[in-house]
Length: 385
Image (cartoon, rainbow, N blue to C red; front, top):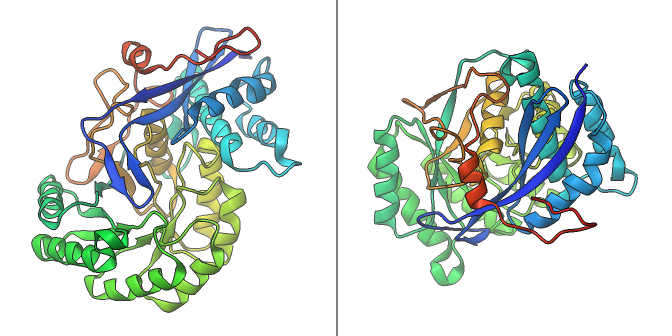
């Protein structure tokens, strides 16, 4: 029997060649929390907690809240350990936010660790659909002038992608919906009907504005309209879904089954997009895919500009999940994704091969990790990294 001996967390931050601008704000640096779980035989599992802002809090949550639950336990009891981690604060209503992001990183690290112990890839441990490669869509053409957006769209089409995500949600002083629609029409005319387009507003609208935009986009044959309003506006989703034929999608800002449950059961969306660094990790994603499949909805995990382990975990989940539509594959520069020896895998003709090595299947580049690690203040005499 393997025994967990240590649980640690590092806060990583890196600067890409160019930042991104979209409905949720401007990001000129990318960050992540890398979770490490060691066992008594020398194996190490790695996972990632989402850290868009305030990653230091998440790192502290991993070590102060979750490590005491995990140390001394058998890592192979993953579902039981997931419940124990969540139950730490569920009684007080903490089933979202930093707590669930911390659980996400620890859970993914457990799956990676168990895969290494058993000598099997995570997708195989999940005993699911058993795909050796998964369909991916190109993401994302960020808000810019129409010519730049068209050029980026054509470049991704030339790479063999069959589906492309485009960001919308310009503010009124940037031209608002009219400017977004001009850019979308320019892209559609350039790429033709063969490339499927999806759009992502990152909560930029209120319900009325999203309804207007959804209706205006109907002639463009948009595959899905992602996050038209804030994630907590369930009434808004209900209004929008009933007043436009453009399918709705969400999931990246949901913290697992507890916040996705009502959204799925009330059929407020058509495409479910859990983010592995936020939804409770691989175990959390497995809960969501079961509910998604039961309600005949599409499953399309989100990655965004998360780091490498969140994206790698999403790849393994996509290999196993029923009802898979596609996995998001980011083509933007992201140093936090390229933390593996040899880098992160690239797709061919819209398909991404799943690593076949034990655990999550890629070797961590420790030199890069050290380079991006942000030293945090010590607490109780113990530094985070």
